[in-house]
Length: 274
Length: 167
Image (cartoon, rainbow over the protein chains, first blue to last red):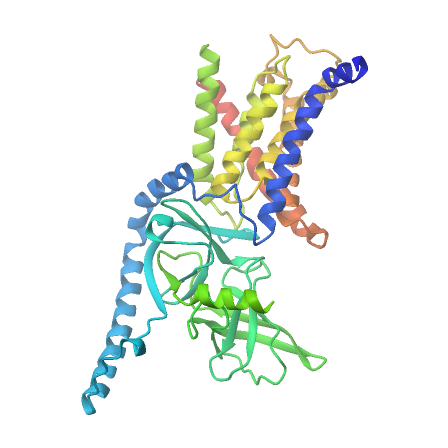
C-alpha cells in the first residue's frame, strides 16, 4: 500500500496528464464517428452567442449577394406559382377531402453564423435550435442546393454536418435518369464533390445535373446538388465522378431547414423490419 | 494577485483572437495560425505542474468547442504543456531550474527560438494527425504541419516582441 501511494505521488503529474489526454482522445474519437451524441460542439450558449455576435458584424459585407440570391429564388417560385394558377383555371376542381391535402414537408429559415470548409470534418453553426423545433438529422438547403444535415442542437443554436465532411453520405440521383448514387467528399476542393456507387448502366455526360434522390427521410426528392464536371471509367465501372456544386460553399448565408412529417412513421416502420 | 489577473486576461484575449480573427484567415485556402499556444509558452514555470496541465487542457477544449473538432486541440495543447519543462531542462542542460526567477523571454535568443519551434511543431503535428487520423494521408498531415507551423511561429515571435515592448 505504501508503495502504491508513493508511486502515485511520484508520478502524479504524469497520471494527471494521461487522464486528461485520454479524455481529449475520447472526444476526438467521438467527433470522428457520425452517430454519436457529441459533448464538444459549437451549439452551446457561449460559442453560439459569440459566433452570433461576430456574424452580426460580418453579415453586412455579404448582404448584396444574399439579397440577389433570395430575389432569384423568389422570381423562380413566383413563375412556378403563376404557371400552376393558369393550369388550375381550365377546370376547377374543389377538393374538400382534407386527407388528400397531405403536407409532407415544411421549411424553417435560419442563418449560418459560422462556416467551415477548409478542414476534413467541417461543421456549420446556425442561429436556431430546439426552441424552434430543430432536431438532429434534418436536411439543410438553400436556394441553390444542399448544405448539410443538422447534427447537434441546443436551445438557440444548432450545428450542421456539412456535405464537406468525411462522414457525410447523401443519396443522390441523376436528373435525367433513375440511377442512384452516393455523394461523398474527398476533402480536396470545397466546391467539388465525388459521386460513388453509380451503376455502369447509367449513361452520363459531362454537364449532367445531379439532384437529391429522396430515398432517405432527410432530403425530399429533386433538390439540386450540382453538375458532373468530369469522370473516368475503368474496368467497366465508374472510377471517379466529380460533381461541381451549384453552391459556393465558402459564401452561404440564409438557409432552409426541412422537417419531414413522415419521418417518425418511416423510421418506426424500418425498425420493425430490421 | 496581479499576475493572476494578467494571465486570466491573456487566456481570454488569446481565445478571442484565435476565434474571431485567426480562424478566418485561410491563407492559401487553408492555413489558419494557431497563436493561442503562446499562452503555454509565456505561462510562468511553477513547482506545481498540475495547474498548467489543467489550464492548457481547458484552453484547448475551448478552442475545440468553437471549431467542432472534438478533443484535437485539447490533446495537443496538453501534450506541449507536459513537454515544456523537460524540454527546457534539456535545452539548458540543467537538472534543476530556479522557478521563481526564470522567465522564458530571458532565454538566449537561439535557445528561445528552438524552444518555441519545437513546441509549435509538436503541437501542430498532433493537431493535424488527430484531425486526419489516417496513415495514408501522412503527406497532407506533414505539409499542413509545416506550413501552418511556420505561420504560427512567426506570429508567436512577433507577439513576444510586442508584449516585451509594452512593458
